[in-house]
Length: 72
Image (cartoon, one colour):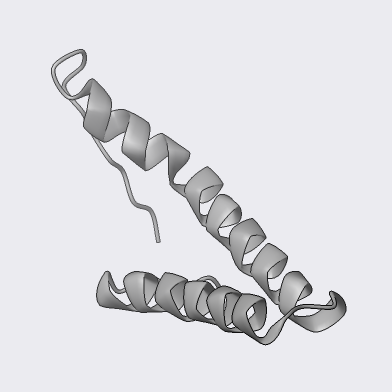
């Protein structure tokens, strides 16, 4: 299967850049998820800190899910 995206540049430069950078955005979100997971798993946190990191990680996944995106 082959897929081809076409853009009218420079008019659609922003859309083009979003398409080109998609993999980097996914990688950045995966890095953020892993950083939050590492904080929760390996650091000595107060209950408040633990709750904040857990909430942030859950919210990240909620945002991704609402947009039909997944990291893996």
